[in-house]
Amino acid sequence: MAKPFFEPHDPPSEAPGITRRQLLPWFGVAGLAAVTPGALGQAASHKPPLTTARYVYVGTYTAPDVPPGGTHPSTAVGIYVFRMDPHNGALTLIQVVAASNPSYLALNPSLTRLYSVNEYLAGQVSAYAIDPATGTLSFLNSASANGRHTTHISVHPSGQYLMAANYSSGNCPVFRLGADGSIGPKTADFQGAGNGTGPNASRQEGSHAHQIVADLDGQHVFEVDLGADKVNVLNLELGAGALSANTVPFANTASGSGPRHMAFHPNRKRAYVLNELVSTVDVFSYDAIRGALIWLQTISTLPKDFVGSNTTAEIRVHPSGRFLYNTNRGHNSIARFAIDEETGKLDSLGWESTGGQWPRGMNIDPSGTFLYAANQNTDTIVVFEIKSNGALHKTGAIVNTPTPVDVAFGPPV
Image (cartoon, rainbow, N blue to C red; front, side, top):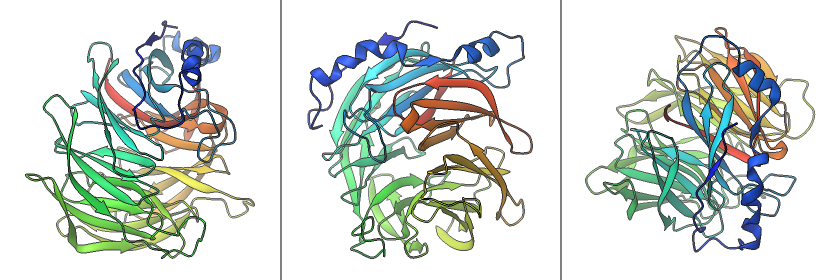
């Protein structure tokens, strides 16, 4: 394995609870982020590559106490940078960048800048430059997210703006990006209006913005509000960076469902909303001109005979548009669905164990070859090859990374 290159910077000044003593584990990370011997053996074979090798970035929880939804203390120290093996998807650690709770990541359209949240009570967002030759990160700057517990971040398809979702305060700020990719001034801040609208008293006592994302062409922006059981539809004015309510201002989900994340179909005609609290996926017809979401179907992410508690976490549509996947925390699985070509509705294809506990993050490489499941509570990322029928096959590559949360794909190697 390549020797990891450490490039720490001080955690954001407003991030509470992190001390120099708690940052000492940085120097022991090399032994924690390693590909298993079995994965290395496969990588050494002469099997032809299935995809293009890429740099891969993993966000983590670094708090020394139990992370949100977790059951064990974290030993992570920041963002982990890997090089992908195109034969089996195995990851080789090349850099660790010290950062405070960089749980969710996003890249700009040109794959030259990476952005992270800093998920603390005083939420922040941070920017990094990507060296195209090595994939390594260099810290640019951080900015206050003007809210509490920043849980999601995305770059508008125009590349001009960074958008963040603050879970606890229910607001979503927008920042103009500088010519060098640094985070500039705040241009807008949408505040959700979910004042106790959901029936789940412990999770829906107010607005809880869990995601903000644009559609694939950047025509409209969507704020997924777990506390209010709705997806707010917004318009972003590219000149001023102002947000305004769309003519069709929102789409409802079922009462108590707790929508968490959404994903768009490559054909721009369908959208899929993952409901965390009831473990379902809502299928919507999407009118990109009007920004309107029209409900078509709701389907469970769990087997009928499952007994126990579960919350969903991540949802992804395969680049081919033929399949949809989501993670189940509790059932500890990836739910697989076939997407009907005509209607966009889902048919269950079954479930695949993630080989670990509490799979919070999950992503598919841009070629659609490999799926990466991040098991937060067992400190592993398990790699699956995606078959032509949507089935998942473990490649044998298991990456030992402390408290992985999100997986993001950077430029080709």
